[in-house]
Image 1 (spheres, rainbow, N blue to C red):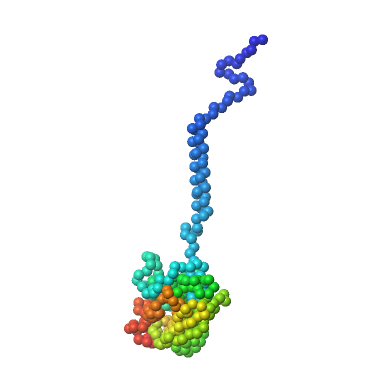
Image 2: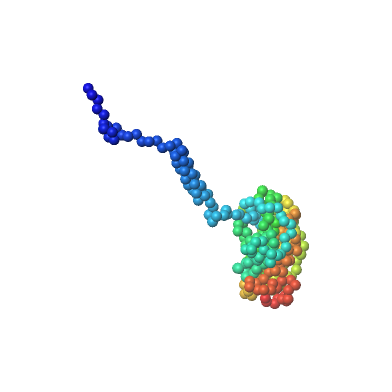
Length: 281
């Protein structure tokens, strides 16, 4: 029997033509392009997921004497001085403002207004901190805070003498969590007490040197003066400097006092100013 074959150009029923395999070079190029697209997609996804909100990580700050800090700062810089005209960075603040009591104070070089920390009043503090003598926490070398006098009656002298013990306990005693970063206060002595002019008002300051159970203790000061508005409650400014290497100079307390001004005033009315004691600024 004769075998028949389909004519040229026609295929036998039920048989599909075989697909031609792509060249090897073309296959490798296609695979490489697909891998590159996948890698780019992974990189973009990782950036969107891992990038912190706002593009910058949150930064914590150290707390004041007697309180804790989430992270240590560099070792103390020694003795910062008041340099309100020489800020660190173009946008760095040059003054500490207490809107509630209507006063401003010069922000010393090497100090900041902390965004974090267990502070009980408007506070500025040294940027540098150190490991507290007790408890493994971190303490500031210096703090200055201002608040309204809410207890006690009498003259600025009487109120300052009454406030200084509370100022010492807040700085070097037991904190709000029941921890004593300096091992508690063991003794104190008065190293200065006198009239002082702040924000154009005659006030009074008392300064103690404090000895503590741990560490080298330090210095605290309570400065009380009438409200610069003339009709508000008196204002108390508390200073706390930790003794030892890194402690600010005691003269910085007087520099800050001289720089206390009513908000909006061009003259401070501090010690050595042209505003006489008792005269309104």
